[in-house]
Length: 334
Image (cartoon, rainbow, N blue to C red; front, side, top):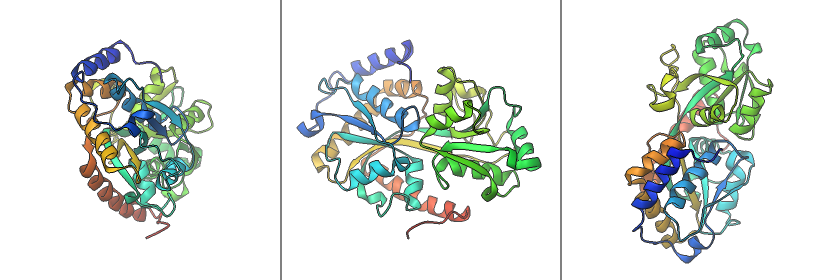
């Protein structure tokens, strides 16, 4: 991701001013080495989440300690989740990025024996929305063109996305195919370790269609990627730079997918340290400048912390269990 542009830097300065009197509630363990762990390779949505968290906390000058971003790919978040649950990453200053896709994987038992209650959910920082994209020179120039191609010869369409069968990006592709009147179980799908790899595969002509999120697709375009976004999977047009992109609903396919992005900490983090993180993000997200910082990272309003976020997570996992059963994916555990 490129450095924040001038407007983003101004937003961060405003946020820093707003947080000048920010009390340092955080305990010594949290302050020692604040870190945000990206459970995938660079340049995807998890990376985006950690960098947003860093922009917020760095603007507040978290005891002079920048939020370090590190990477631990594996199982689309499963490896990082396991290490947090089993306390192999015991630093209370370590946040881990999650998304709705993480909750979908939990609903299917893809994180092994672990449940949504095995970590402590800190904050949802914003929402992203699904996006369908192709190469800029693709003969598929609209969502309707894609539907026609699927109906005429679906074998010529290869979807690429971060995640395996049953992941949120696979679900987006499955819903597009199903709403096109075709069997989603017969679609061609290539799995990658994160959206960044999938976008590279699209540009390299290894796949036909990218299923991911609007923020990562827009940032790829800003970074010079020659891709075209066919549709955003929101219930209505998004504001700002994405306002020119039609929704799937506008183009005749009733497919909506919201991706909530946030951070969690390990189950073994103490109550004072956990509350410190929750209060810190709650305070930061209440400042007017936070909206500007979030917007610069391509995300949209969605804010929950602490117990409210935990309730949302538990409810979402239950809803996702019903969805994957409808799509015939099933679950690996009750």
